[in-house]
Amino acid sequence: MMMFENLPAENVNLDLVTKGKHSALSKIAAKIARRTALDPRMVLRAIWLRERLGSTAIGRGIAVPHAFVQPISSPVTWFTRLAPPINFKSPDLDPVDLVFTILWPRSEVHTFLAALSQLFRLVRVPLFREELRLARSPDEVIAILQGEAWANNQIPPAAAAPRVAVN
Image 1 (tube, helix red, strand yellow):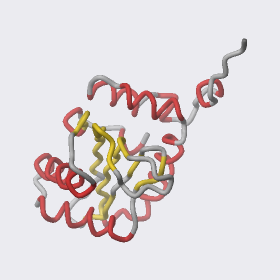
Image 2 (tube, one colour; image 1 turned 180 degrees about the horizontal axis):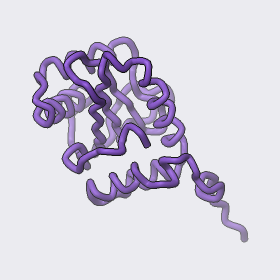
Image 3 (cartoon, one colour; image 1 turned 180 degrees about the vertical axis):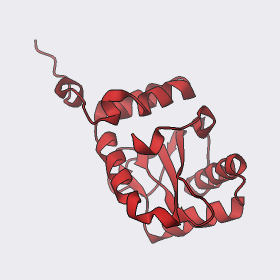
């Protein structure tokens, strides 16, 4: 998957405890700023300005906060699993526990929608979401996100479909 092909383990947070949406975005922005040497206020402001336009929660417990940022030349991606899930004003009203945060270079806006579309196709697959929820380490998360079948959208039909028990 293009967005996560070089995701380092340091950009994966599992079971982050927060008090709500603003707390979650603040903690994630601070972690991104530390790893990238960007100004933490600028990162949070960029993410929060986009969030104020409308919730970046897309349903099924997933949010994709994102922003276009001038001082970066390549995308910065971050995966966070929240514990417990929080209210993110999701369209399906489900609380969010899987957060994919993306900072995208302002100079590369034309490539963003294709990458975002790829992510959205993956998170629609129940097995993909479940694997992320059960991952025990950042390395497991990276293996799931970079898995060859997921990356190439070659998910076997049996994996994509719900399993039905036959009596």
